[in-house]
Amino acid sequence: MGGFSGLIYSSLPVLVFVPFNTWLGLTAAIWAALGVATAILIWRLVRRGPIQPAISGFLGVGVCALIAYRVGEAKGFFLFGIYASLVYGGAFLLSIVVRWPLAGVIWGVLNGHGTEWRSDRRAMRLYDLATLVWAVVFGARYLVQHHLYNADSTGLLAAARIGMGWPLTGVALLVTVWAVRRAGHLPSKSEESAESAA
Image 1 (tube, rainbow, N blue to C red):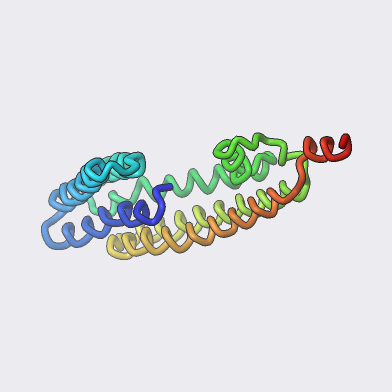
Image 2: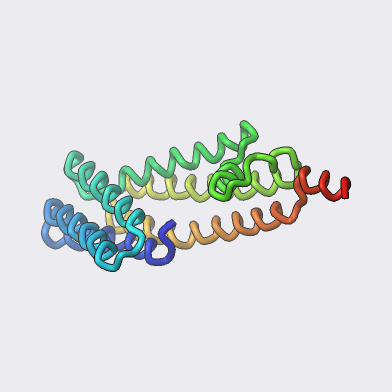
């Protein structure tokens, strides 16, 4: 949601955390990651840009750092993201089962389109597909990173978090945009009524 710069800013604390943990230990790595997140937040404030992504990133790093501190191991830094992926994947999958695909629901909320699209079978199929792609993305993140967590592969965990972040999110976004455009080309019932009345 923070655009390309948001993707970079979200990756920097992870890129700092792993080498600092290797060279100087867990405590130094935690402070380094928090320091980078704080610097990013200050930078956004100075530039008077949107700070919501920076605030979210700072809070996220804070939660991850706290978990790593409580667990006492560097791999704990990734635990929150691992289980967040499981929750998100489950939510997207469940939304398909109950016939409220989240891709369509979120699009409707963000753009004020409501839920009229649910009465159109083609739009439902498109949003089901987009939602399923998101569920697969989150599910893949959970399975791979949970395996690496159990294997104590902190370096590979960091690589997987970044590598499965940008590329997979890009694929899911492309499918979602495609689905939204295809669904958006369909006339709504209100438009059909207006055309018939004319």
